[in-house]
Image 1 (tube, rainbow, N blue to C red):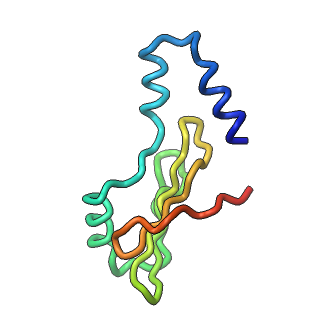
Image 2 (cartoon, helix red, strand yellow):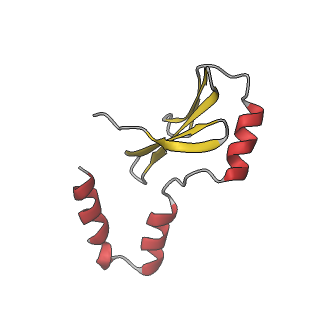
Length: 101
């Protein structure tokens, strides 16, 4: 599935540079350290809470574990297809979760 998306992305040569840049710009980005800290402080007492984006897709999941707050960031491409789930524990990037179909 990812390979087909990659091929489709590189076949955008007929589009103008501005259209291609707009396509890249609409993709979600991984949180930076300041954003992680802000979310951790704001939601440190949260447990099993989901935040949704304008497309009604899960954007963040907050859960409490023995080691503290865990944040899962769901990253989508421009078409709303889930491409990555980043996990943050105690305000630091921990790794990516497996995406199951």
